[in-house]
Length: 112
Image 1 (cartoon, rainbow, N blue to C red):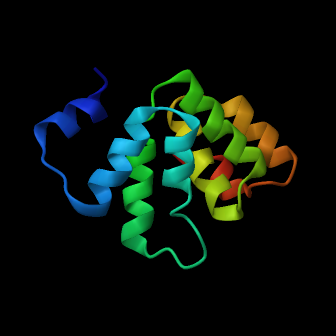
Image 2: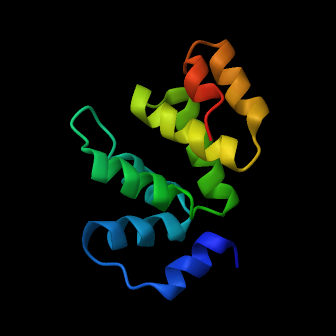
Image 3: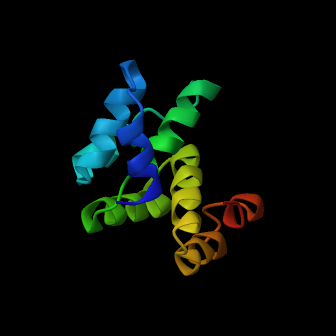
């Protein structure tokens, strides 16, 4: 079990964070859509942290593919969080491709 999932097993989360974690751990497109749907121009700092943490728990191929979809098709904030996720798991070529297409800026392209 990856470290983030081990951390989840150690703690009892509640409320919106728990809901986002549960959806992310489903690992399907619908779960990723639910999580990414919480990122918009009105998202507060706490929500962006919740989403970032929840996305870090996505471990399935279907979830990966859906996050990759957001890198190229999401809103700016969704592309930024997809970029963070992909950089953290070592998928830098995908992020570089999005950067070269002008979908994310240089700061996001190289952030982890």
